[in-house]
Length: 529
Image 1 (cartoon, rainbow, N blue to C red):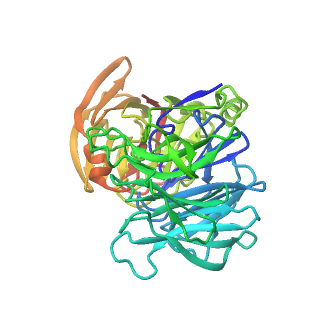
Image 2 (image 1 turned 30 degrees about the vertical axis):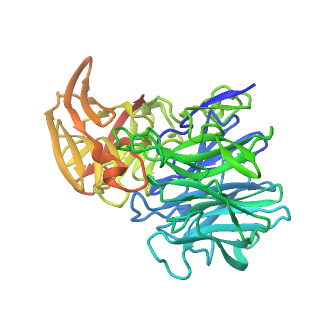
Image 3 (image 1 turned 90 degrees about the vertical axis):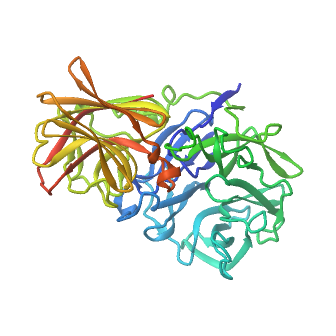
């Protein structure tokens, strides 16, 4: 039996994927930058259908993000399993640097972070050798001084797992497959048939991104360059090719002996990327002791045939089915979803906050809905606004919410927001029986539309995205009114706004002053592709 995986396997803002295989189970973790909880953790049994089983860092004590920019915080995690324990190693570039967390059960709880003294640089990974030794591999600036921006080296050192400390010799082993390469990063170390392999990214996580590999009979080198490097890239396919920025890969072997690779890539619309870097899948075969990606094709494909039985997390004995049995909605990645907050006790694992959620900022109240504090912290700050969101996972989609208008006076506002970062966002705000549509670019608000609302205790608003255009509707009873159309949102793209994140969309509340009892009540929320 086999199953067909459709690319991307993880649509939307799921960058820097790392994967490990444990028996017949596969676990995948991605970067989350300044969003909380940190490092979404996905599970599958067929590499095709995935469920989110939580996040690695779901407690504020594990994840300091104060004043972290949208593209700061958590970079490039790696997940590994050894001798009954799961390990995730990552970099918090805003607070503390490189750290490890562990768990016996991938669903948690995960430990508090062990920060690794002396581990400079970013993009750490772990390798467990056959003799039981553990090695740290990461990337840092050229120790002899950077000759140019991105002149970095990959280095290795043994790690004492009992003390979570680096021990022994620290050795720089590789600085890229080509001359004067920039940003050799995201290194992963593997061992197969007597060779140690370092697979890593080069060229920066943009148009020149690529996957390259080297090998050695000794973990300390010297490492031999693969004459076929890069083993995967799309940089030669032209700017108009629909899938770009391919790189930052990780590999696993299935129990049936097949090899697969996950990596990031983007799908721009008219050369603009609003969803950020997504997770794709490819098949790997081995020739002359080197990996070949999608042999005979040499690039990512829309579909990948996988020699595994099909698995459905909605029907199987899975985390998702257990959540449903407990009355907790757990939406599958890439799916449409609808939430009635008036009957919910907890939010699903797919929901995100910026930096620090805070129990005083967001809560569910049965019969009422989702209560967001009208905070004086706005989305234009690198602080913690009252914002609850999901990832944008489609080029075209529609979100709706119903909120109560009572209390939205005296400078209090609430509504929907499509957020790229603190300087680029589209907001739909209700206040004083008025709806305003605001497009923020370079930190400056531009009023797109201002519409008088009907007198009502509840009002529905909808934000519709069609590629690089947005429109806003007002929903009242059986009537639908258009508040704004043809809003150009190309500025909410990586190409304009910069950074490493994709857009999120969700509910937002703000106030001109700090009031303990000032809340906005959202009764429902839906995301439909």
